[in-house]
Every structure is written in C-alpha cells, then in structure tokens.
Amino acid sequence: MSRIRQHNLHVILEAASAEFAAKGFDATQTRDIAARAGVPKANLYYYFRSKESLYAKVLLGFVEPLLEASAVLRESDDPVTGLQAYIAARIRIAREHPHIAKVFSGELLLGGRQLPEECRDLLYAEARRNVECLRSWIARGLLAPVDPEHLMLFIWSATRTYTNLGWQMAHITGRETPRDEDYRDAAATVTRLVLGGVGPVAVNEGKRLMFAT
Image 1 (cartoon, rainbow, N blue to C red):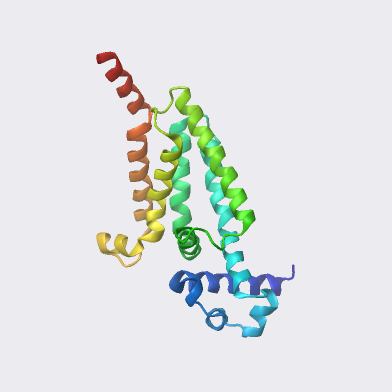
Image 2: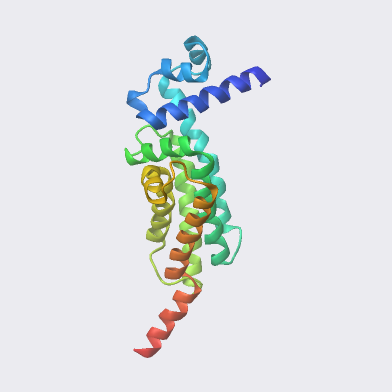
C-alpha cells in the first residue's frame, strides 16, 4: 500500500470514527466525514463505496484491540494475573481509542445490527475461550464458584462504562477530559472489586463458611 493511500485511509477512518461517535450511524453524513478528514467527498467514495462499508471498516478496526485484550486473560495460568491484565487492557482500549470504542459500544447497544459477520464470529469464539478459561479456574478451586458467563458480562459492563459514560466520569472527577491516572484508578478499582468477589481470598472465605456450617 502506498504511503499516500495509507495516510488517506487513516485520516478518513479517524474522521469517520469521530463523526459516528458524536452522531451515530443514521445522523452521520459522508460530507461531514470528508470535511473533517480534509478530503473531497469523491475521495471518500474512492476508498469506500458507501457509508455502510465505511462504518463496517470502523467496527472491524476495533476487533483487533479487543482480541488482543482478550488474549492476555489466558497468557498466565494464574487467574489473579490474568484477570488483572485483562481488566487493565480493556480500560486501556477506552483510553487509547475513545471514538471507535464509543462507536462499537453503541452498535452493540443496538443489537449489533450492522456488525460484520466476521466480527461476530471472531468475538463469539474469543468469548467462549475466555469463559472456558474462567470455568477451568473455577473447577480447580482457583476462583470462587460463580457463573463464568455472568462474571465475564460483569467485567465487560464495568470496563465499558468508561466508554459509554464519559460525561458522568467528568462530572464526578470535575475534569472535562479524564487523565491517565483516572484510567489507572479505574482499572485498579474494577480489579479490586472483581478479585475481592471471586479471587483467592473469596475462595478461602467460601471454604471457611462451608466448614462452619
């Protein structure tokens, strides 16, 4: 791919992510994307045949960071290490890709009606691998006996909050734009809540309760 083509694709996708994040798919106009990107509207259609194909490309661009974040969960056989790394990675996505994260999250809230089939397949397979990883840790007594599907959903919802509710985060912290330390504190807090409920301490507490009854 030529350097010019690569640059044009980058600026168009960045502009599209910002427009879709601010207005949603239906209200976004391709002329506004072109204006934000600083390219003629004809150039936009040279690279993308329709608004739908451009939107699909934006969504696809978020799958790779999600898969990378997901993979760290299973890199260690220690659930404390794996869960801590996974939560930190998901929070980092919200910090590094704020627009595209909001677009992707908004699409999921609408039922993923325009999510490309390849995205669905990749994300579904990865989710099943992660659930089975949690199930294995639970079966071995390394995590508390909770439902692994709902544990995964809780982590998803807790980390996605920092994409969907940025305005609330700004209101609580008193800062219009979250700082790096805000995201670090978010990751630490979510990690503490998760491990406090299902980590080794929770497992040991559960065993003590069983012996006491």
